[in-house]
Amino acid sequence: MENAQLYANLEAKVEERTERLQQSEARFRQLYEQSADAILLLDNGAFIDCNPATVKMMRCTDKQQLLSLHPAQLSPEI
Image (cartoon, rainbow, N blue to C red):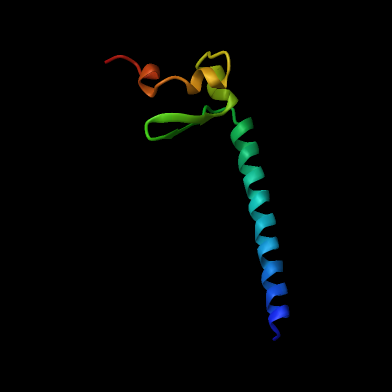
Protein backbone atom coordinates (compact mmCIF):
# COMPACT_ATOMS: atom_id res chain seq x y z
CA MET A 1 0.00 0.00 0.00
CA GLU A 2 1.11 3.50 -0.67
CA ASN A 3 1.69 5.99 2.10
CA ALA A 4 -1.21 8.09 0.83
CA GLN A 5 -3.57 5.10 1.04
CA LEU A 6 -2.32 4.19 4.53
CA TYR A 7 -2.83 7.78 5.64
CA ALA A 8 -6.35 7.85 4.17
CA ASN A 9 -7.25 4.59 5.93
CA LEU A 10 -5.88 5.85 9.22
CA GLU A 11 -7.73 9.15 8.84
CA ALA A 12 -11.01 7.31 8.17
CA LYS A 13 -10.54 5.15 11.28
CA VAL A 14 -9.81 8.20 13.43
CA GLU A 15 -12.92 9.97 12.11
CA GLU A 16 -15.08 6.89 12.75
CA ARG A 17 -13.80 6.44 16.29
CA THR A 18 -14.17 10.14 17.02
CA GLU A 19 -17.80 10.00 15.89
CA ARG A 20 -18.48 6.94 18.06
CA LEU A 21 -16.86 8.64 21.06
CA GLN A 22 -18.96 11.78 20.54
CA GLN A 23 -22.13 9.68 20.34
CA SER A 24 -21.20 7.84 23.53
CA GLU A 25 -20.47 11.10 25.34
CA ALA A 26 -23.82 12.52 24.21
CA ARG A 27 -25.68 9.47 25.53
CA PHE A 28 -23.84 9.69 28.85
CA ARG A 29 -24.55 13.43 29.14
CA GLN A 30 -28.25 12.86 28.46
CA LEU A 31 -28.45 10.13 31.12
CA TYR A 32 -26.53 12.30 33.57
CA GLU A 33 -28.63 15.42 33.03
CA GLN A 34 -32.02 13.68 32.91
CA SER A 35 -31.53 11.18 35.74
CA ALA A 36 -33.96 11.44 38.62
CA ASP A 37 -31.09 10.31 40.86
CA ALA A 38 -28.76 12.92 42.32
CA ILE A 39 -25.27 12.64 40.85
CA LEU A 40 -22.33 14.63 42.21
CA LEU A 41 -18.82 14.60 40.77
CA LEU A 42 -15.89 15.31 43.05
CA ASP A 43 -12.22 15.98 42.38
CA ASN A 44 -9.66 16.45 45.15
CA GLY A 45 -12.37 16.78 47.78
CA ALA A 46 -14.38 19.45 45.95
CA PHE A 47 -17.58 19.28 43.92
CA ILE A 48 -16.88 19.88 40.24
CA ASP A 49 -20.27 19.08 38.70
CA CYS A 50 -23.76 17.88 39.52
CA ASN A 51 -26.97 17.13 37.70
CA PRO A 52 -30.28 19.01 38.12
CA ALA A 53 -31.66 16.29 40.42
CA THR A 54 -28.87 17.09 42.90
CA VAL A 55 -29.68 20.79 42.90
CA LYS A 56 -33.34 19.98 43.56
CA MET A 57 -32.62 17.41 46.28
CA MET A 58 -30.25 19.74 48.11
CA ARG A 59 -32.73 22.61 47.75
CA CYS A 60 -30.16 24.91 46.20
CA THR A 61 -31.14 27.82 43.99
CA ASP A 62 -28.79 26.73 41.19
CA LYS A 63 -25.83 24.53 40.33
CA GLN A 64 -23.25 27.19 41.22
CA GLN A 65 -24.62 27.47 44.75
CA LEU A 66 -24.20 23.74 45.26
CA LEU A 67 -20.75 23.62 43.67
CA SER A 68 -19.56 26.37 45.99
CA LEU A 69 -20.25 24.17 49.03
CA HIS A 70 -17.70 21.90 50.66
CA PRO A 71 -18.79 18.25 50.93
CA ALA A 72 -18.62 18.51 54.74
CA GLN A 73 -21.36 21.11 54.59
CA LEU A 74 -23.75 18.51 53.19
CA SER A 75 -22.81 15.73 55.59
CA PRO A 76 -24.92 15.10 58.67
CA GLU A 77 -23.36 15.99 62.00
CA ILE A 78 -22.04 13.10 64.07
